[in-house]
Length: 390
Image (cartoon, rainbow, N blue to C red; front, side):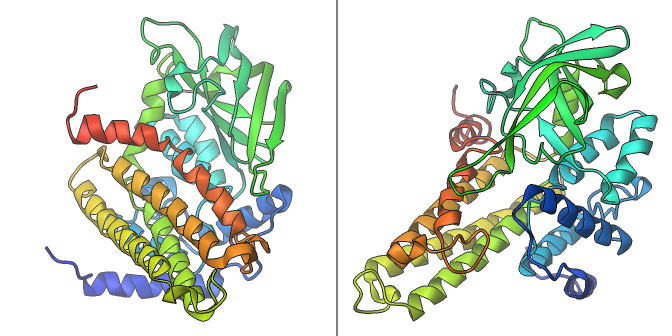
């Protein structure tokens, strides 16, 4: 096993780092969603002008077409600059765009793909419903064919940035089949269509990026269906062939930086006993060491997973192991931060500033819910990795 990067890869890393340092936004990312829209689209446009938009997209569709190891390097350097991981462009770049590339008509590709890359349109995801989260195939939002349109009625929830999105990748049920995975249709929904109501959901850490979306006889042209009517489950699953573990690199780099920051804080500040540095407390020191070791394990697993994905056309179920470990370690790290900082953690909100940890602690709970709960990940690992019976 060769754990060293080649000379060409090292030179590529220098190229990435130099460009990011010279071109990254100089102002902090705002909190207001309307301002976030302008900020994120502007940064995406800058990446497009610099030739760094759509690093995993094929070059024939305007992307950079980087290899998996080059993508890994990009995300490592991106996170090292403190840039936001999942911003308002995430769905368009990493989900809707790749789905359109693999399954859309030429007309759909020609209209939407350049707009995503240039930072001219934002996408949101209309998948989850109040009774269809991890069990997505249980969705009930209904669409009836009426002439050359689908007429959509129902509700979606946890739709990030729906209030500022231009388009939505929308899963609807167009027929009831003998299997819940059949009869689902994937369609492009214009978020300005009459009959759409968006209600932001304010979360306990103070943000409001999640939304409820209600559809009251919303008319979606049949020309906006991607794939075929009733074949939406296959269309949704095709996107998995694009995301092969590299984007997760940025998350674990950020988490490693946070853990090191917490260790430095524990060295420089009096602990909960108010008598000595927090790191002098044997139990706190042990927990810090365990979290740091877990982050190192996460990084090693990420590298192994990417190397395995280089040999396969599609990612395997081992990605659930990364998702599970990252979710649990993130919660552990911020719970430890609360114990180390004590009442002082209530000052500020570390999602937005450097003076407190409480916001990130509260937000960390969402990590074991979004993208498939930890319980679902454990089921996948048990059944598809370990071969355990259902």
